[in-house]
Image (cartoon, rainbow, N blue to C red; front, side):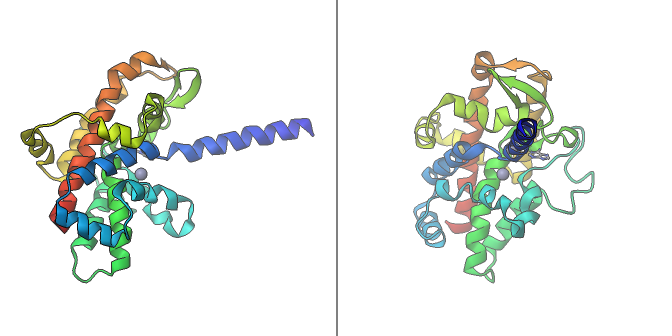
Length: 260
Ligand code: ADE
Ligand code: ZN
Ligand code: ZN
């Protein structure tokens, strides 16, 4: 009886681990991006978005796409959270996944939101999805290598606990920093208008390549089984903060184009 109980506990802990593997930036990261985006919206965009979201804010809806993952009706959206393609190829040189990916997902959301024939319900749904996916786009390992599932299969130690490289970038560093999403958003780096405009230049695909370039550095930053902690935080958390801020600023650009 005792042995069975222990086996059950071990199995349960494995399955919980695999659930948390696919949590993306984590709640705080996604909310930071939503909150920062809100600060860069035009008045008109803010009004139109508030109407669609029934008063809920971008930070509030930013984790909706993760919340629906456990509902089988929404299974088809799971591959939209990431895009893996060879580091030495352009996106599209290899046939993109027929199940969809982050690039196709963001395109579809924008198309529905721009269309005059979309229903209000569809617009609300795809707006919530878009807020989330633009966040995911800025997590470097969401533009990673397919063979290790964006670093999910690269086991490392985070301080005293077992983790993996993907999770370190999704949430371990952000959680370790221990600031709320509003505190992180309020303490984002001050940027000049020119810097903001530079960040907003380009298209979704350019931002994907930027994340992929960062992903190459992230893969080189740790070895399998390595113990990561204070030093890793010191060297890499600034990149996390910058990516969350860029995500917010670019999300605002997309939303101003649609709703502004
Ligand atoms: N599953 C497979 N590849 C992934 C990635 N790059 N990010 C998150 N989940 C994944
Ligand atoms: Zn993730
Ligand atoms: Zn996601």
